[in-house]
Structures are given as C-alpha cells and as structure tokens.
Length: 376
Image (tube, rainbow, N blue to C red):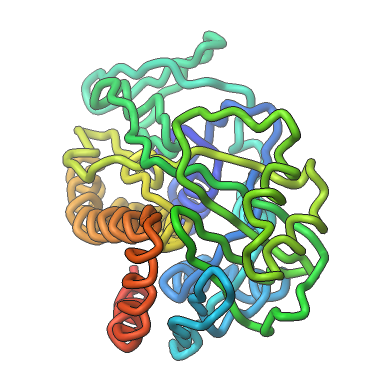
C-alpha cells in the first residue's frame, strides 16, 4: 500500500484522499488551518462533477443536502432574457450545494486521523524513490508520492516550479447566503444578469438557502468602502433587476464574503517525478464557467485511477497530467474569454454583446452540453 502525502484539505484534497482510499492507498492530508472547514458559499456540481460524486458513492447524499438545478438563464441588467440553457438533459443531475456541505460529504468518509490540521508546508526533498515533506512546525513525513492540493497560492507549486504569482483579472466578487427567496425566482434555475463591467446571479442550494454572487471590475486589493460592504453593494446594484438589491438587502453583512479573481495561463509541467498538483494549485480558473470545484473533483478521481493502474508514481503522474491538461487548459481559457465579455462598459458594446448572445442561443447551449458531457 503506497503512502501518499496530500498538502491541502479543501475540496480537491478531501476528494483526492477519498478517491485514493477507495483505490486501496494510504493518503494522509496535511492542512494548514487548525479547523477542517470549507469557506465560501455555493457551488453548482455540473453533470461532469456529479459523475465523480456518483463514483465516489456520494451522489445520493449530495442530492439530499443540495438542490436539483434544471436551467441556466442569462438576462440583461434589467431582467430581459437573453439565453435559457436547459441543463437537465444528462443521465446525471446538476446539484446546487453549499461548499461546506460538499466538503463535509468528502471528508466524513476519510478517517479523522488521516487529516493532520495546523501544519503549513515548507519544502520537500527526494531520496531514492521516496519524498519527504517538511512543515514549519518541524514535522517531517515520508511517502511514496506528494500531491499539492493547496490552492491558488500553492506552496507545493512554488517549491516544485518556482515562485510565480497568479494573474489578477481585473474583477472582484462578492458572495452571500440568505434564506430570502425573490418572487422572480424560478425553481431549478440559475439566474444570471449581465451589465456594463458588472454581473450577478443567484441560485438555490439545499436546506432553503439562496446563494447570490456579484462581480465588478476593480483594482487589485481594493478595500471595502467606508460605508461597509453591504451598503456599498446596495448602492452599486440599486438600479439592477429587483431581485439583486432585494437579495443583498436580505443578507446579513457577516454572510457576505469578497475575493479578488485570479487565474494562471495554462502551462506544463505540473508534475515532476513523484510530485504533482491538482485543482487550483495546478490550473486556477475564473468562476465564470462554474468549473473550479468540478475540475478539482475530476482531478481527484483521475489521479487516483492513474495511481491504481500504474504502480510507479512518476509514470502515473505523467499519465494524469497528460489526461487533464487539455481539458483544464480549455476551461481556463474559456473562463477568461467569458470574463472579457463581462468587462465591456460602453452601453453600445453591452447592447451588441446582449444581441450576440440572443443570436447565439443554440451555440451557447451546445457549448454547455459539450463541457458538461465530459466523464472523468
């Protein structure tokens, strides 16, 4: 039984630990936070991700704590429908779920002693066919392979490939959770609204929670306004379709989180020897296609399969990267392209974009289908 060191206990790390255990390996996760929890708000598990959840034995549980999603509707700032994409035509459902619920489903199936909390990765060394991981606390561990699942600013990535910062893409986002349901909400829908240099949307999660998100062009590391995060958003989106200001007003300020948006231009390698990366550590992407968590689940499932099929971690990781790079590269680039459409601010350009989307309705639907038809 090969001992696999995993750095990072978020969705990607937890999914990989579970997938590896199901394949007969001994993964041990080292997580820098002192409490095992997933921050954030909502996530859509598209059919490509619910396929992985099914193979991990978690789909039925995810459906119970999530919400079945049927349509993705794009609208203008004032609520006029541009595109309505049915997303329930696959053999697997699309599920809206709170990130914390997804995280809990993944790690509850891995023994707690296999999650070591409060350990910050520092460096690694290789000797013969073994890899040694060192942590800032002084802890050092030995394994047959090391997988970095430690996010956008991965310390494993920096140690493996050198320190190169991610690329800021001129947007910041705010996300919130509330139990308020707008009258305009259509059950099963993801509603998304596109304006000039701004966008927003909302969807139902499980347990009666409504998840909303807004994004706007902004300089990097912009501080909250003096009037407070919630009031700032109310001012920015006061003239948008009524559901958006209503959702912001109904949300407690403590339930609104904000982050700047980054990605990395897709590059290889992300595997060297018996060390590899997955999720945001390997291929961070903008959230415009909703595939960040989904591709991390795909990575987890594929890397475990490759290790099972090839007892040599070096060859297994090469195979894993060769399978995953073309898909993740395409999604990273498509997500960036989509964000560029959202940067348009000139009213004429926004109008042309909206008209273009209406004309391209069938092409957009087909693009969604091909993206979500992938099965890891």
